[in-house]
Amino acid sequence: MAHSLFVLIQILSPSFESSFNKLLEANNKRDPLGNFQLTSAIPSYPWLVPAVSSGGTTHQPDITRTQETYLLAGVENTETLRDWNEEIQTTRELPRETVQDRVFRERMTAKIMAEFNEAAARGAVLVARGEVAALNPTESKDAQIFVYNNIFYSFGADGVGTFTSEGGDEAARVAVGKDVMGVKAVNQLDIAGLATPGTIIVDYLGKRLVAQSIVPGIFKQREPDEPQVDYGGVEGRDVVAENDVFIPTFSQVSKALKVKKHPVWDKEGNRHVLEASVETKGLLGTDGRKYILDLYRLTPLDVSWLDAYWTDNEVHGSKPKECNYPHRMAVLRPELAEAYWRLKMGEYVKEEVERRRMSRKHESNIGKGDLIHSTQDNDHESSLVNGVSEMDNKEAESHKEQDRIDISAFSWSLNPDVFCGQQPRTEQEKEEWATDEQDVRTVADYLHQKVIPDLLNDLEEGEVGFPMDGQSLSRLLHKRGINIRYIGKIASLA
View 1: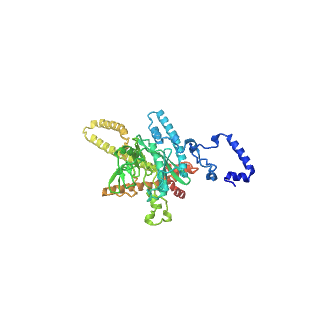
View 2: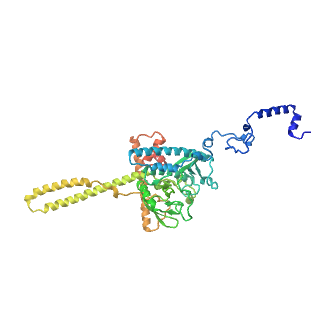
View 3: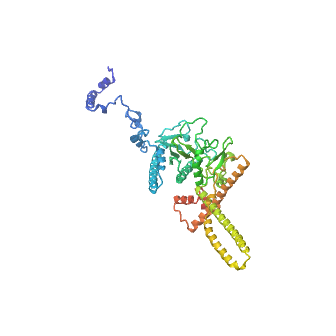
């Protein structure tokens, strides 16, 4: 009779006892730490290599899943955390008075942005694979936000219904791309006292992710009656915040980008005058800097395109085939606004020159007539004529100085919030709003009637070369202020 499994195996197998004794002797010769786990020690990251006795041994390792983060920098990457926003803003605030200062500043900016892009892209890959825990796991997948390596991540999708009337996820995807271009445009202006977060877009596994440096104070819990941002639209167009601190810097951006100072109205009907689009927001960070956010609508909507190819499903039920454009985020390019501004400025200068020429001609005729008819002595007629000629020479010299036209009085800009659902209240506001809408339609017509035909003519004559690939073609179109969506029209007209 056997009272244990050990005794039973010895009875059934005579060689078991001798073999087991040899195994015990061999184990006794080994280091105990190599055979027996210390009871007071917790293995570091045991999920990397599962125990042989566990059911995890059947797992097939994924060779494409990076282990660099876990092996080199720990689980949360806490050993190498960097304050990306502080580094970016400090670099932009470096002196720029001398050439050496500007060169050093540009080099440091390029270095820090390259490092930020690399780190943000690596983190975006982890977020897309689901390896980073969301800050709001109870929300829908598209509405989840993430923080990894001091970089803020969100999906380029309409997770909270902001773009429901604009086209949903398609509009949100385009908006984040426009936001990056807006950040680039503002950075090129290099306005002192205005900060933009580091922003990149990563498309991975069919998902678009937006990676931004964390603005100090963006996660700050505010009072119930205090808006989350300090300037611009807070919750779409329902709540609008104003703060005079942002007016000087925002006005510089608006002047450079040809954005008109205009009124908007919140859901209560209150009137607010903004320097930029209601979608553009200003945030006063806890570090004392003024940040400009959501720059996806610096220019007005391309109303001619939307009239031809966009139909709202909620109004018409289903979209006709010819009006099936997926979103309403079709905006005019800043280059087009700049080109039309130059055209209007040229017309203004010509009008000023002609007005001054006519004014001088009229004054000259009056002066000569008075001077000749005021004398009664024919003996002095020749001397008077000589005096008139000398006066003409002096006037010609003075007119050279007067021919310099001061363009500071010229002003032209576009309202980016027209055709976006704003409802003016008074008759004067309605008239002004109608004028702004007509200005936008005029620029859109200028694109169709002048810019695109001129481009085709230049391509035919060989004035601009011949684009050999998609990148060179898109660069050529964008330089002229033409959106890529017009490439079909250009092909048909060619």
